Image (cartoon, rainbow, N blue to C red):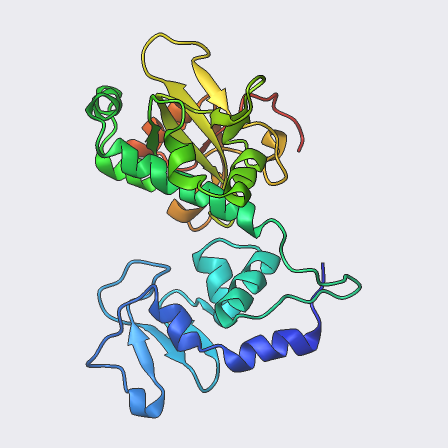
Length: 290
């Protein structure tokens, strides 16, 4: 996938590297000289107490005199957020409100954006529901997890009723269609209408390389069956191509020398809870080359 040189130049000219980097560091007020376009901070790529990381908006680059990290706003996003080139370009373009033209490809916008939005809103709803459901909190604590672990992996809870999520997010026909396309609700076989796919379950959001929620795994509370229920295949979720916890592992480790593959969601989260962050889980599929 290629982007035109003119489009990339427009991003570089319009984007402020000071603003992009400033979202992730705290500028040192004593050493920085905004009037000269000179900003300093402790490096976000290695631990230090004295600022050796500098950003020059005029020149459009950052540089660390401690570890040698160097690059543009695009490079910073790729390094800090662990994004590939295409994802980083799309992220920066979105900040500027730019459509993303690709050479040889007709630009038709992003038809999947509403689907990602619905999945993100569902994750928010499940997280909020967990905070008010003590049995789910007690279950997670009983498995050795704490609040930081739950927040890091965005663990939530799907209420026991048939339509908790549907009532929260499915007010319009269009919204219900997005929930249906995302695999979050199911059409009733008789009588019409829909109901929530996930009910009374601990919810584990599955995130792609950009941190977007693409699906869920739900662990039942109690003795119900199936014990684990996963999202179906959708336009954005293909379980044979995803690994649970890969996004979180990349956020925790700057350079992943290896990946430890475990069986389930709780295995991955529990190991991360104890400091083993280079861990992922398969999504109920065989281990393949892909």
